[in-house]
Length: 561
Image (cartoon, rainbow, N blue to C red; front, side, top):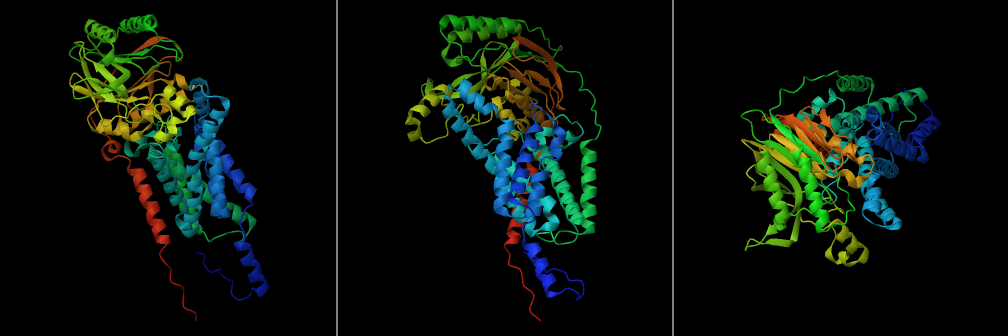
């Protein structure tokens, strides 16, 4: 809806009125400039994340796109500009998708290219949805445009965490600030969605101020496609932006964590993904894992539980239920070292006769108690789509290319419930692979009683790309949100120990076969975020829906005089 233009007394001629109306109706920007703005936002966005990690750019990454949305006002054009920005962002920040499919998925170049294009087409939709919907909302509620744009961006990130195919919460906007301790004070309160909202709000305020300054520089009201707030709103936006910048640059230097009581050994075995497995090779592999485990000299303080040993996710055929040799070795290691061993393996459901159901393989984490007996088992809840599972109808899996893909990737079955492990009187949760990028999983584990968190991963599938550093950032975010130690054991890096403030206290170089020894503590206090969950994302979604509903309420037109 447009407001009636204000006339300065009665000095305007009819010709002047027609001219002003024509200018107001004309889009404020050319199409190519709007599209370029989307592309620039995509470029700035992925540069904010590893490997380049110019995190300060996240505070201006969305400004070109948002400013173009506010200035131009065409929903259709904004949709395609957002789409272009989203494609550029995900192509630049997730090139490892192509590498994984081509090099490690044994797909030819043509099929890999088509699959990567499909990935970009799906993920780019989120940026397109934001741009089109944000333009529509800003036109109807110009006074609240910065708030609505930030809320919409956050709500769409929450949506991306759940759809499609179980969600893809990779490189959420707030995650770009993982190295800024002062700004990360927001995580125990609002989680990564709270951080995303603040960064998006900073972008929206700056875009609004720049647009207003541009219009003032051009002179007058003529170039505005719809009315926007006046001087008071401008001052309010500037003050809020100033406070945000101050909070983001707050020189927060938290004190070191208290003396740790529990010893841990994180094994980094560097197992090759293309190993040709047979009995002698497997026996040699188990011997090497045993040798690495025995290097562990980390001791636990007197009166504390046993040492914790972590075997990561790795491309090895570990099947505890089916392999007496593995059972015997793990029992011997656990009893000799008085250690609890947690390993990633392929677990199976059990039928009524107690026999493994071979048609129900799970990507699982299993604990071996210090007495050598198997303890709890956690079956991975969030499988990697098109990596561990093909979320497609069964009839499509009969296509030869997809059938070969299923054989290579595996057709795992997702777990049905959360499971915590125990070490003495303490409890901990295990996140497998990219589950560390799902905020709700770590939060639920902590709310259920986990005193620390573990992440078992194999980042070797991504090659020497940005994915390993991005995965580490996700684990650090989960530690900050829940104020828990995070022990991250990987096959070939980045193996690291993360304190409750998200700081990496110890790590191993990539591609180096070694054991990382560390000490950590059990924490019991719950953060506001742990208790209340993703309330910023849900709150932003509610705000957007309320304003969207209001926009459909018919407005009374003034009666003619």
